[in-house]
Amino acid sequence: MKRSLNNRLARFLPLALVALLQGCDQPSANDMPAQEAMTPLTIHHALGSTVINHRPQRVAALDMNEVDFLDQLDIPVVGMPKDFIPHFLDKYRDDPTIEDLGAIVRPNLERVHRAHPDLILMTSLQANDYNELTQIAPTLHFDVDYRNSQTNHIDVVMEHLMDLGQIFGKQALARQRVAELTHTIEEVRRVTQGRPEKALILLHNNGAFHSFGVQSRYGFIFTELGVAPAAPDSDTGLHGQPVSSEFIQQADPDIIYVVDRTAVMEHRPTLSADSLANPLLRQTNAWRNDRVVFVDPEAWYVTAASVSSLVIIADDIIDGYRH
Image (cartoon, rainbow, N blue to C red; front, side):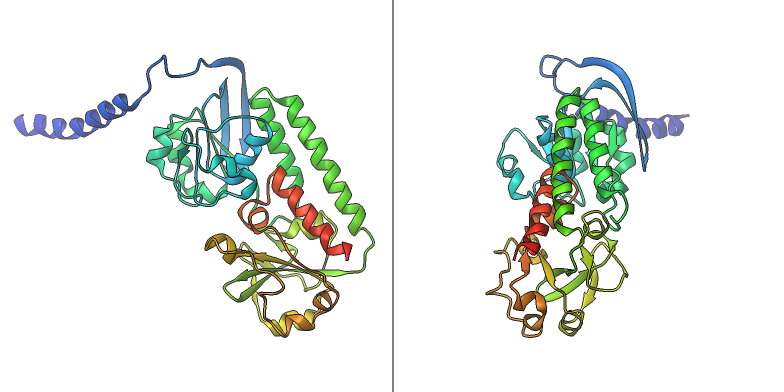
């Protein structure tokens, strides 16, 4: 009997200690904002369904695209990863009221819990943590495909923006943002429509290059923004297909968009025409005609699935056709 009791105590005490510690860490009722009642809303997504019973007051965003959505709708964020914050969200970087939730690809779940969110926004980059996150708060998955964006990428962005507008009671502002983004996308399509130029999207990583085709993270640029690809279709996925300088020369694109991953990952100055010493690349039509665009690497690589990033990408795309 004593051994049985001891075993039960051994199982009970750690749980009780965790509960006690968590209870000590919980804010008092006076510290928590009052929850605004709303008609229960169910959002279906790739990982399941999320039920929202109250207007969220404390939102944790685990992806920079999600932070930008909240920024577009004037919704404060209580926690976010701060390892790679794009320049257009720079105001969040040193805000002491916003909890640093660790890394985008591996958020610190203890910090997420400590932020006491009543809604968590995530993407496929944090999919492995979905079940644990749902134990902390209702968790909404943004169904953007970072590996293959050739189908409905922009529609998915707009639909997610409208979902968030409904959740936060910001439907009118969400519709306004969608209208503005629609105008931007239409402007790009007017520029690219019927143009014969073929383009190559290259990811630069410490001197090496990867190319992105239609079936890749930048597929939407070809299928939805009307840019004609210079390379044959291939399954290039998240980080592209490794290519040689000879491949780039033989593809001979009319426009080259260079995404400098090294600048993002190592916090270096962005690559430029002066710093790119590659004799074969300089023999392409794109280089000879001054149509090599060194794009905004934070908008293209860190985000690329939010309102601000799509507007920046649109400007970069148009820039390739201006010369």
